[in-house]
Amino acid sequence: MGIGKLIIVGTHTTETRGGISTALAGYQEGLNQLEVEYIRVNSHSDIRGRLSTWIIAWWQVLLLALRYRSSAIFWFHCGPWFSMLRKLSFAIPARLFGCKTVAHMHSPALNNYMKHWYSKYLLKIFFVPFNSVIALTPWWKAQLVAFGLKKQIDVCANPVAEDILLAAKSALLASEPSFEQNEKVVILSMARLIEGKGVEHVIDAMAQLPENYHLNIGGDGPLKPQLEEQVRTQNLESRVTFFGWVDGKEKQELMQGADIFCLPSRYDSFGVVFIEAMALNLPVIACDWGPISDVVTPDVGLLVPYGDEKTIATQIKQFVDRKGEYSLKGPKRVIENFSSKTCCQKVKQTFERLMNEQ
Image (cartoon, rainbow, N blue to C red; front, side):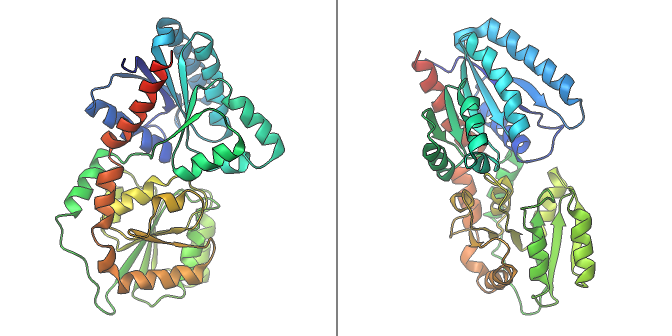
């Protein structure tokens, strides 16, 4: 038996910014490569009204559930609470009409929800209408098991887009990088500029590094004015550059112009941006927290305690001294583990198992 009619419900891939939309684009590419047909329902958009988008999506889900019933699998991509509430409102009618439902959990806030008594109760209600759950890494699966979730939990990493995969293949053909003493070293941080991403700690680390170290910051968000003031206060204007939000070709070019990727974030459920950096042969400095150690392994990067700018500076220097040890390991890992096709083959197994259970 195949997987029936697959219906993907999640944020719009071109009208929103962030990790979920990037992951969804990768999954769609993988499904196309596997020649798996699917229907897309957009549950959220940054440029359309939230209420109208929700109403249209709910109506689409209802009509699709009525049409396909037990032959349909609804694959819901869930962010934090508001996203989860939207998906819950969609999953209930889908289950009532006999469809299979899968909750794919993307939000780093999920860890906090599992810790507080009131959110624990709400979380248990949320999972009721789902047949199974997909976690991004083994760490997340362990947390859900410890939480007491009795549903089938599968693990599947988020894929990178096809252009990043091609960049990884190209990186394998490039010459190995090296540094000369006093040569300019470019560090890149790229994220939505919000609390928990750790960009402010990278700026603090810059004050402890020699003048030939420069920091490029890609991203936008409410913390940007504070970060710009931090740069001015520490007299780092000549060594720190803000590029604003970047995407597509501009994003890839910014990564290709860097030597080290540094984002010591404790607010990431997976971190597709780490995979993108690896693909472009950048050694990665990340935060030693939760699922990040499943993604940034010792062969491709180093982990630091959150908020420890001294260790960040030390590890950056270590990369400069030992860059050859990490060269080409990132692209190889990305090609082997995070291609759209590889990740879609894993979720396809989940869907096939679900259909065989009926």
